[in-house]
Amino acid sequence: MGITSTQISTKKLVPLCRQLATSYEAGIPVLRSLEMASTTGGDKTVREMTRTMHTAIQGGKTLGQAARDQSKLLPPFLIELLEAGEKGGRLDVMLRDLADYYEDRAAMQRQIASSMVYPAFQLTSAWFLGTFSLRLVSRIGEGVFDFSAYLHGYLIFQAEAMAVLAGIIAVCIFMARMGWLSYVWGLFTTFIWPLSKVTQKFALARFFRSMSLLIEAGMSMKSCIINSAAVMTNPYIQKDLLKAVPLVQQGSTLVQAFAESRFLTPTAREMIVVGEETGNLDKSLLKVSQLHMAEANEAVKRAQAVMSVLTVLAIGGVIGYIVIKFYMTYINKALEGIS
Image (cartoon, rainbow, N blue to C red; front, top):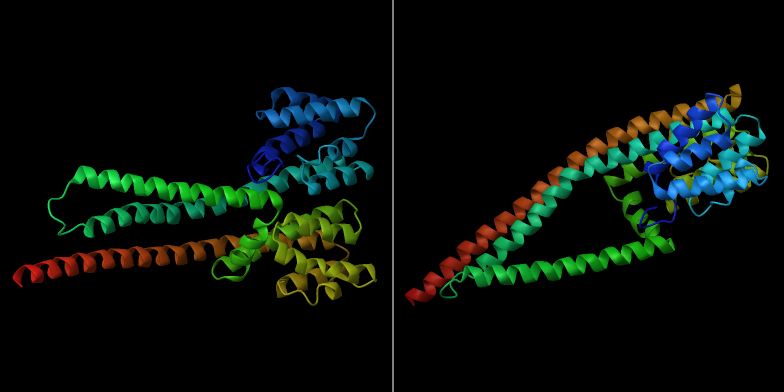
């Protein structure tokens, strides 16, 4: 479980889904697969959950019912797919697709995280070196310089700054647990360039990947849209796409239902048309998802380049300010000495 959610993280779901899919395809019953996962899984929470599910199935419940009992730990999307696959007699396909889906999602998260490492390192270095230099420059001309006293004061300053940062993180965790952080963070990432392109492409890739799986599982179009929108974890794009649900209920096609969407791309609209006309909507949506994933990766590279430039400019501005302040302080002290 993550600190911002009670659900098991994607990273931990990947080996579980892959183990269940591989075991089931090899002819091992789900009950036995869960028993194996409860003893060989690497995460304690996953082992306890699979052990509970194993016991529930032994007691007469279906896999879908056992999974739904663990709704605090398992995402709704996974539960819906397990139930649909079990009812439709396609559990092997659903388990394999779930394993592929969460592996793709984990790769997406790694891509985003890796793109943030270098800018984060630059900003962290700029903070510590910049504050050290600025405080040092401000001490010029104050008589005999005591480096030990200065270092002690600087460490106290950083301790206070870290305490403030810890408080901000605690507030963010609380807001995430209450479901508020997604609105605050989503407002920033959805509408502010260059992060907006990255957020929108990744959200659409996840949405259409989920839609493809749910349609293949035989779920109703209403349920497909609702569950796929929930997977995106972006309240603004989710709200936009959910506007299609009442139109679908009234008998509109997907093209008509998504006509007023602000975030759907022209390519996505065209592929939906092709999918509905050919009867291969799940495959068309999978292709859209793959296309948007490729575009999202390119958007990440562009955003990373822009952020790197902005970071360098910010660091350059701080260095320039330090140099100017140093010379202005030095000159003012010299003029005071002359007068």
